[in-house]
Amino acid sequence: MTEQAAPTKKQIDEFVAAWFRALDFHVPIEEAAAFLADRDLHVQFPDADITDFASFKEWYDRVTNRFFDENHNIQSVQADISGDQAVLDIVVGWQAS
Image 1 (cartoon, helix red, strand yellow):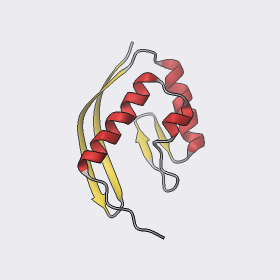
Image 2 (cartoon, one colour; image 1 turned 135 degrees about the horizontal axis):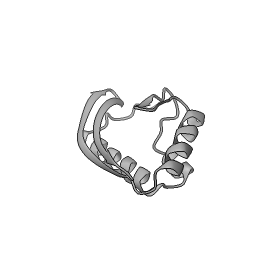
Image 3 (cartoon, rainbow, N blue to C red; image 1 turned 45 degrees about the horizontal axis):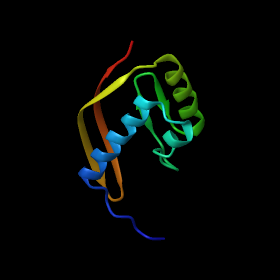
């Protein structure tokens, strides 16, 4: 097994920007799911806890069918990097009609 390098803050910021851009554009579910970890997944939204593809699909289907013109503005990204993993605390300004 090869050891992966620790993610950098720049890589994390680019990942976060790409993730929210994908949400704003309602990319196909397969494209959005590519952002998710294969194991030990935990994404906590105000309205859902995502722990696997099934819970992500349920959430993604719900939000992409409810909101059509949302805009995510990233306000801050805090990263606790440990080895090849990072725990992120992200504050986002979100608007939709």
